[in-house]
Image (cartoon, rainbow, N blue to C red; front, side):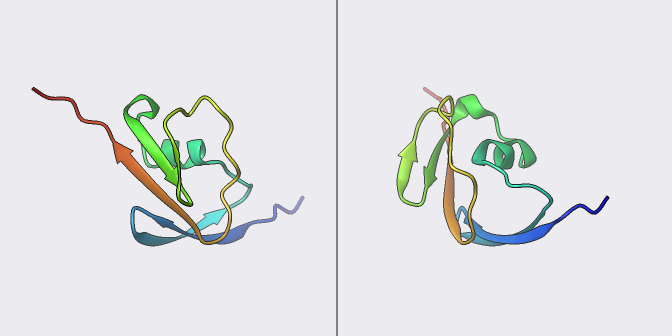
Length: 75
């Protein structure tokens, strides 16, 4: 059985990454890979802000621009 794999280029927080993938992935998969807590972040995906990860995201596409903003509390 042959598994198809591919490279995808995307921008994450201003840096360009080339990822080797063996299946299409969503942003929540990317967050898990980079070990981010879903409860403490806001996502900007291609200029659109998502403050809830409960809704389904589109799959990551070639040359997507993703910004991960971490919420920090303090007093």
